[in-house]
Image (cartoon, rainbow, N blue to C red; front, side):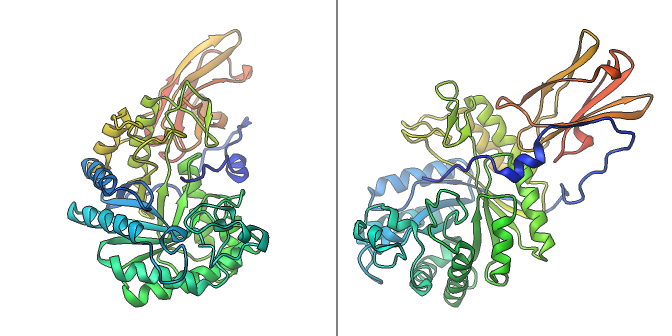
Length: 439
C-alpha cells in the first residue's frame, strides 16, 4: 500500500488565493504546457509481489490488459523476496513474481518494479527495532535503508538479469522524502538515498542497459529534497525521475520540473502514482486525500491523462490503483471486482490519451452590488479568473477547485454588476481553453 502525502506546504503556497486589482496583462509560465508528438506511456498499479496464489497475478494482468495498459507497476518488497539472507530468495514469492511477469509479457505489457523495504539482515535500523524484526513480516525495521547499499544493488541487479526483457523500469525505493518515515527512516536521508542510487544504477546497467532506472520516487513537489539529492551527487545515476503527486497533480509536476531545469536536469518525469479515492460520501478524507464521487474520479482520470499527454517531459503516467482494498477506494475496480465508472474512463484514455480535457464552465449572477462567478473546471492545477472593463484587465485571482471541481467567487464591488467581462481558465491549459461571459 502506498502513502498519501498531505498537501505540501510549497504547493499550497502556489495556490493560496491571490486577489489584486491589476492594470497589466497576464504572462503565461514558459515551463507550462507544450505540444508533443511523444506518446505517453500509460498504466496502472497492481497488487504487490508476495507469496500469493498465482491466480491473483493472472486476474490482475487480465484486468490491466482489458484497460489497454502498456505499463504495470508493482511493489517488490526486498524484505519479502530475500527475508533470511542475501541470495536466498523466497520460492513462493518468486513463483508469483514469475507468473506476474510472464502474464504481462504475453499480453504485451512491461513492468515497473518498485523495490524497497530492507530485510532484517540488511536493515540499518537501531538495535531495538532490529530485535523486533521478523523475516517475511512488515516491521518498522524494514523502513530503514540497508546498512550496505551494495546488498540492495545485488538484489536489483538480480531482478534486472532475471526479468530485463520484460521490465520497463526499476524504481529505486519508495518515497524516501515521505515525512512519516514509513519507507525511508533515519537521519541523512538525501545522502543515504544518493548512496543507494549510486550503487543500484551500475548494478542494473551492467546486466541490462535497456532497463530504465527511476530515481526519486518523490512525494514532495517543493523541491527541497530533490535539491538535497542533487547536492549529494545523484546526477548521472538514473534515467528518469519518478514522482507521486496526488494533490494538485499538474501544479506539482510543473513545480518539480522547474527544480530539475534549474539544476540542469532534463531527464523525463514518470508520474507512476496518482489518483483519487471514490470514498464520498462515506468519508470526507481517506489516506490524507479528499474523497470524491465515483463519477468525479472517472472525470479526473480522463482529464489528467489528456493534459499530461500534452507535455513532452512527462514520459509515463500510472494510475493508483487497479482495485480497491478494504482500507481505501483508489481503485478502478471495487473490492469484489466490479467496474467503477473509472474503469471505463481509464480504458478509453489509455487506448487514446490524446484529446481535449473538460473545458471550464462559468455563470455570473448578481448578488447585491457584486457579481458572483461560479462554475467548474478540470482537476489538477489552480484556476485563474480575470475580469476586464473596456478591454483592460482590472481584476485577477487564482484559486483552487473544490473536491467536486466546482468554484464560487464573489468579485469586488468596484467592478460593478454590468459592463464587466469575466473569463476563467486552468493555468495548465491557458486562456485558449477558457469560459468567458459579460456581466
